[in-house]
Length: 399
Image 1 (tube, rainbow, N blue to C red):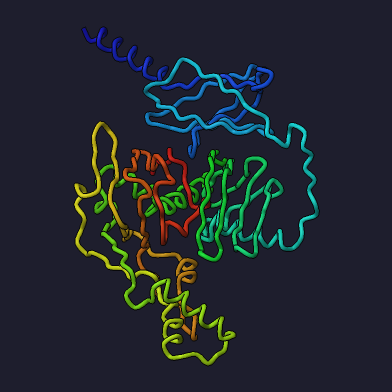
Image 2 (image 1 turned 90 degrees about the vertical axis):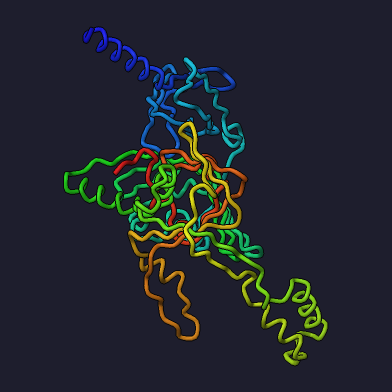
């Protein structure tokens, strides 16, 4: 009986492994010829492989839902979402050549000082400004196309191929398929999208120990750490305090109509410095923030914003949530970036890492890996918004 049970268990385990292996083939969409050395990987993980000379690949998948990225230089990348527990026997992927490869000759002019200045702005707002991000190196900036509109203050960056990043403090080589980067400098608002593949770097035992220590530091208090703790309903145990945050119209700020009327009156008077007290008062109060914040100091029960079932967790709430991580304080660089130095002011003292997040859709699903299923449905502010790609870890990272 014991032998039969053991055999039965081993057989079912083998079947489970086979069911979690994604198999497929990659060909040219026009010729149907197989493409060799195509990069195939699970988005934001260390799990990836390359196609063989027949365009075939096999990729082991852990449990969960993932975006499979098919990427090859000169072709448009493909993104295909799959579930590990319901994989087809095989998938055929057809890659389409990029437009400029089909015949448009792209002439690269000499990059001037402004281009290099804009490159530094891009790296600060893409890789980040933390001590870990400063250890990152962008190895192929030549693939970037940078466009800055001085009138609107909008910086747009695209890439002709995957960005190759060495994160020397976390011990990863990152291949990042950038699909969008927009920095609205006047509003201080950055959005970017892409599909990173992580490859652990090789090093000595002492290097590995440093990387492990730095990875844990990057993980603690991160959005991924928060999402995992949320999925397990262990926020307090993991050091997170979550409170409701309300933003209300500032009663001391004039309406937009009043402000525009005062500015129109000023223009009609030739922008003279002599204006009536009422106009002067409106223009002065126009500098006030649009909203005032009110924080509810009472803990928020999970039942008010989180539903669980069948191994899934779903977020749903209105307004904003403030998250304070009590396990670490803010980095000095973040303190400096958020301090008011006007009128001879000095930098404030560091406090616990504080972030704000809101939902851009009615429901957002949170996976056990620490991934928000549709990341663009979640808007981060504060510390999580300050941390960028340089501080990110793959979704299959474990302490």
